[in-house]
Image (tube, rainbow, N blue to C red; front, side, top):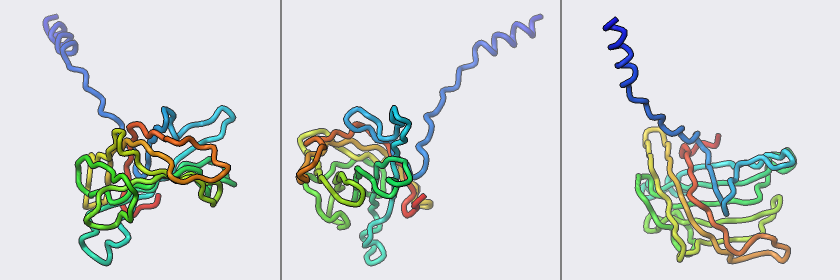
Length: 195
C-alpha cells in the first residue's frame, strides 16, 4: 500500500514538460501584413501562399567580403495554376549579415550586395508579370530584422522581421494603399536552396 501512495505522489509531483514552439519549416515565411496573414484560404476556397527563396550575395563568388551576407525574396501568390508563376506582392530583403543579431534597415533602397552596406528592404506589387507599385522603408516607424539562428555548416538561417513601407512609385490603376505594415513575421531558409 505504501508503494502505491509513493507512486501516486511521484506522478502528481512530476512537472509538466513545456512544449517547445514548433520550428519554422525550411524555406518558409509567416508574414502578417496590416493584421492579416499572407498564408490563408479565402472564403471562396482559393489558397493564398508564399514562396521563400534565400541566396548568398551574387558577388560572393567574386570577392570573399560578400560571403558574410544573405538575401531573402518572399513572394505572395494565389495558388491557382494560371497565377502560380506570377506573384502579386513581393518583399526583397538584402545585405543581411550571416550572424545572429538585430539589424535596422536602410531608409533608401540601394544595391544591397556591398560589404559596407546595411540591410535593405523593398516591397513590390505586380499583376501577372508586370510591376505596379514600389515601396521603401518608412524610417520613422519601428523596423528591424532579427537573425535568431545561423548554422554555417548547412546554410540554415532563421529569424523575424517587422517594418513599415511607404509607396514611392505607383501605376495609374493602382489599388494598393500608400502605407503597408509588416507586423512581426518569421522566416527560415537554407541559403542557396530553392525548395
